[in-house]
Length: 141
Image (cartoon, rainbow, N blue to C red; front, side, top):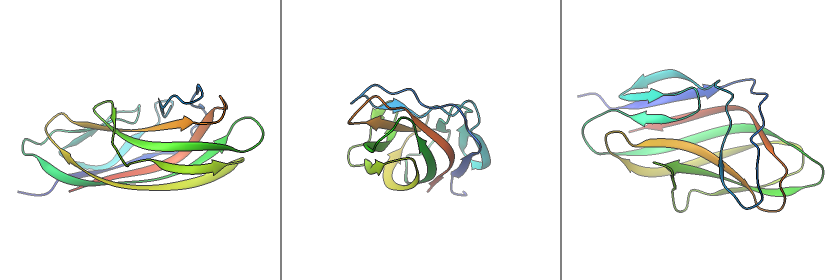
């Protein structure tokens, strides 16, 4: 009766996420996402974490990522957790990005069998793309 959870990492990504202004887009991982540890979860190389357990559980989601902004100037970017393709209300983390930076995200949600979590990004001021270079995403019961 152990608890479920997983640690997913991505390192050295060079594929920017192509953005359209005011349109949340799943972070492009260039198929570099991997599971470092996983109990009752599956990690896909595209950055999707799927719960495989049979009982409903409450989990905390944690993400720490570094990024390189494309284009010049400074723009506001929003990072979100999505569950089953739907933005989790209140999961937005807003950053004013100039060039390079990092962001930490924390959120809690219920998970049922086959539910999945993904990280999305949105540029609210232009169509400048976002390169998420590295990340660690933790899902813990």
